[in-house]
Length: 304
Image (cartoon, rainbow, N blue to C red):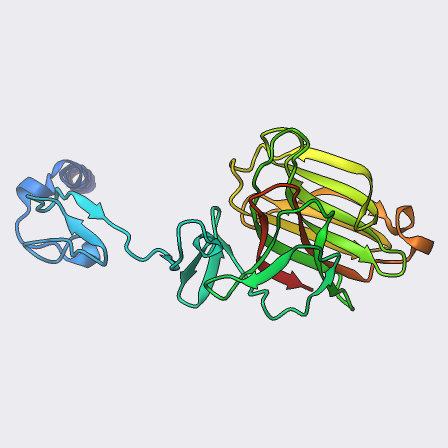
């Protein structure tokens, strides 16, 4: 009897093992697409419908003959910035508007309206300044060899100035005709200043430069001059930053819309300004010694 029961138990165990193997193989080899009917629910990874389809969103269209599961999807963009009105060469053509935000480009950089800043002249000479057609930029222009023509503002308790300027420079590239634009630090008591420029330098490529001056009409010397190989030529706009910290002047530029800043030069106040004192004014300017007039179009001003 015991031998018979052991044999029976072994037989049942063998059958159970065989059935388990068959179940595993069945789960492995069954083709759901061919052997299963009905609608597979979304909780099992299906569509939950017998007629699946895509729905086109905003600015999306489907190509001719597109049906599930083969679609040709076309996308379009109609929501870019709108060009402001202006004539073919006016400064307003250099700024765009999207909603209430203005940009210079490329690359896109959201500007801060400079027209409310309290500026004063340093060596105005023949230079003039006016608000551009869109009312959001200041156009400083000159066409005479009168040194630097500068617009200044008090630094006060601020330490950092960031500006975007559109340089319209004419007649540059050789023969001593090197128009340019700049931002600067200025010490009123000594009339000494340092300009951070973008200009021509007896060649066809616009360069970044740093010049020190005994006064706005007395050039001192060149501290640095670098070609901007990473800027498109001609330059659409320049993004410059100057900073006063730890009795030192620092100068930066950005070529990617302000995402990153490169420090290009610095000097101790004692190296230029009387008594090692700090500058009390900063600003922007233009210099030109030919016609037509060159322009420094101030598109953005942020003092902090």
